Image: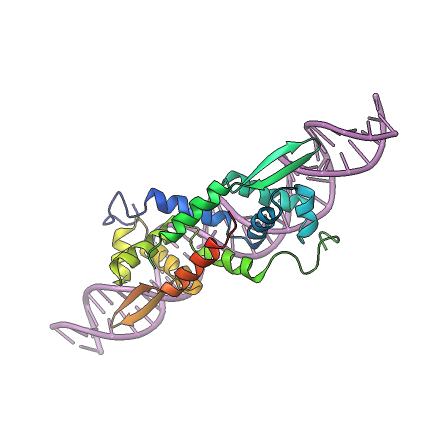
Length: 103
Length: 103
DNA sequence: ACATCATATCGTACATCTACGATAAACGAT
DNA sequence: ATCGTTTATCGTAGATGTACGATATGATGT
């Protein structure tokens, strides 16, 4: 092991892992903007987001995937389009975890 | 440009950038644990943190540098050691930005 | 001066992230 | 059936992140 004196069950908790995963999802400005935009629109299709961001369609799709995997947004197929919306539960969970950081 | 139809001054705001920078700093479980541990101790020396984490000294020092650069912690040289503590202003700022996300 | 301790930094290997163009897949319209 | 539209995925290049051992730096104690 790198550090034999460290406590095996370290101070890194499940909550730390969870917070880190959610923080990582919002660690890119484009993804923060997507979440905000989605929240302000209630719901909107992928192409609308592409039109608003200075990024290629493939890149936006990739960011949306990150947000979907982490639970921040949900996508629903609607004919040829995909309709995205924020998952408020994940936002609230993130807010709870961040708020519980001792300041 | 990747996407000529995108608004040049895009929806990505300064706040989005700021939130992303702070979120990135907490996007690793070890760094979340360091902030929590530091907050619970009030203040403690680098070696104490190394002893508690399952990571090499160099790695911990690197994580501390990330936290210092982003403003989450402050380090004060105290003789041969360095004394670290949380910067509550940055934690509060992060909490404010996260709390202002529409859920 | 010298050895020791605590910490930061260097160099490096490997993994992950971010961006893109190209292409595939799924649907609606003609 | 074929075409255009919309979105996801593939492949890839370059940047950044994460881990480590080794080494430099700076202070204390002998």
